[in-house]
View 1 (cartoon, rainbow, N blue to C red):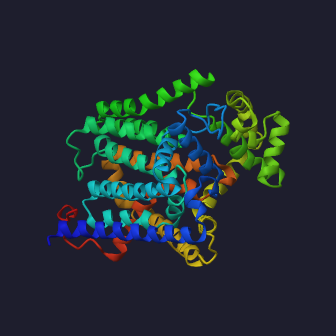
View 2: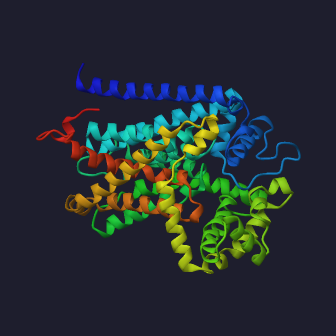
View 3: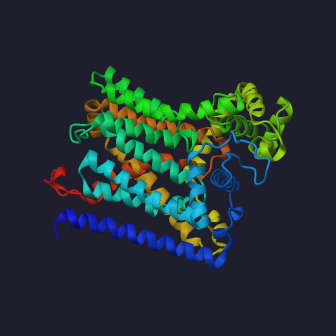
Length: 458
């Protein structure tokens, strides 16, 4: 068996073992909590229930509504991609089919990230380690077992990066794809699907545009046609959805969720830190001072007969004053949220899903895995600064793109305030995985001396 065939065999074997691993999780859920696989109302996260209800209504009733019964009020909170996927999967095989879809999307994301690393490094070991990281991450295990949008979001982000980065930011070692303009446009469409899965991805194409402009300032010739096609592909579906919201709600906006988060979570964290008490108490104080609907009503206007567009307008009017009331606490609480997200684990969620309390090994592995990849990533940056600086000078646009995307998703984590939980770190993790893999390869000397990376095959 030649090296290329053996490498593919190892990847396929790893994927097969991962599928068996999740077959074990499905068996455990079936034994301990069988209703979880049959009834989406048994979800441990209320958001999962509304995602699936919305998806069911799309496919069964032909309405975009979270109401379980008529009258079906149109929804303004959730963007459409994940509800469409979840509803389709649910119609085919219930909640279990949604979870199976998550597992397959995770494998696809891991493969895309591995191919992207291969494209830039021509290192089999680098690609393989990045492929393994999401498969070994307990955070991803937890998200695979919930009808939530995070896994689909990561897949579309990975697909967008896989198509756009080589077209927009080729390096000397990578070259560029055969059809860079087509690749850039397809990547833009993938980013649009990511944005319409979770609105937190809205400005990723803008970050890449700014990286291209930054490379131009450093005298690196930009690929303006590819950049423009990427932006076009990203804009068309998103603008179409915002036009739908304008027609239905009179609001040319992506969703009604952003202002809820900014007021009741970003601002709520600062108020909680300054005035004390719980987040719920801080949100209650914000509600009373600014005469806003309660947080629960903002999240579920259809259940209370409220107007989501009016709620969004009220939150938008109060947002600036809420955020700037305690600016120092705002920065500190947001930073605490990032640290909390990077250190948090999902063992309790897995215990609730399986109704099994003996998951201490998962808890230990969560701490070991997350601590190790963060330590390796930081070590790679700190101890490879001269080499990284040389690379950045040769490839400024690519470097700015990676730094920009990392900074952007750190910012989205900060917007959740002190309520930031483990799953909000997921979009940042591919960069962490790649850095950690690079440092581990150096420590274990996986690249044989004298072997140019391009001699590896994958």
